Length: 310
Ligand code: NAD
Ligand code: UDP
Image (cartoon, rainbow, N blue to C red; front, side):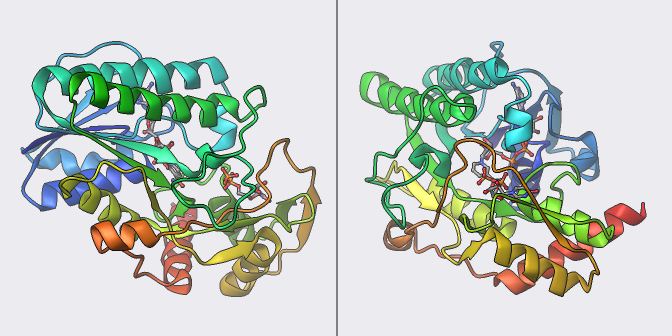
């Protein structure tokens, strides 16, 4: 098949492009390189089945494809808050443009949505039928309300135009190819520990997150795309939950670092708890994460050790 991956030069997108090519598909990667890097996909440029297009999906593009994995959108709070209006445009206009391609070419389209649609959840762990607790006017709204509207657009194109859609809600995912200055917690803590700098815990560190290794996440996304008679939304994530303070201690122990922990102000609207209920993914896709947190962190520490030595 010819498969379009928007945001294909980013962290998750580049792993996805690699996996699709290794299964023999043709891949068109569309990216504006806001948070993605050419370096993430340069190895793939040798492959005649791979095509890299610099394009901003806020603007329409004409492509003929069989499937669309729609990932383009900055994912780290510092990046999506850098230009919040642009983040909204990417989520709304970008998703409309991709749905336009899906409608015209009858391509199946999968949206990379997020656990952020649950906001600061009052229900724990989070199931797909929970509608969320989202501040519509806060500094995270450009991202979480943007993704909520992108989900709405997907559902309305499905109901109104019969577009073949899939929605996955991704929970915090980490692994090689995150940017060292990405701002997300796992990469921040690993880079700080490796550089002997203090680990910056925001607030008292009692807020929780659950961390999924990238390979597992890509398995889940591909299983969802290949599934029949199930449009989602479906949660994809690893249910093992950590407080941020415990995560900092774990990273210090695993890196053997002498770094200390310092506390910084908690950003506003930072969710207090997050853990996916992945029962639905198990039932519908036979999916659950396989990589242990210890193995996943070890691989990621190894990756950043090499990156920092470059
Ligand atoms: P990332 O920032 O590494 O990747 C996003 C990619 O999209 C980058 O390559 C960026 O350059 C590109 N992009 C951004 N705006 C664009 C635009 N207007 N036009 C074209 N390209 C554009 O982030 P990621 O972690 O790989 O996330 C990928 C997707 O998965 C995002 O949609 C994100 O919301 C979703 N997601 C990720 C996580 C996670 O933990 N990694 C969690 C929930 C949801
Ligand atoms: N966080 C932190 N120190 C950092 C970066 C993040 O304590 O250097 C916290 C952040 O406040 C949040 C959690 O770690 O509570 C996860 O943050 P991240 O930006 O990785 O993801 P998200 O908040 O979008 O889940």
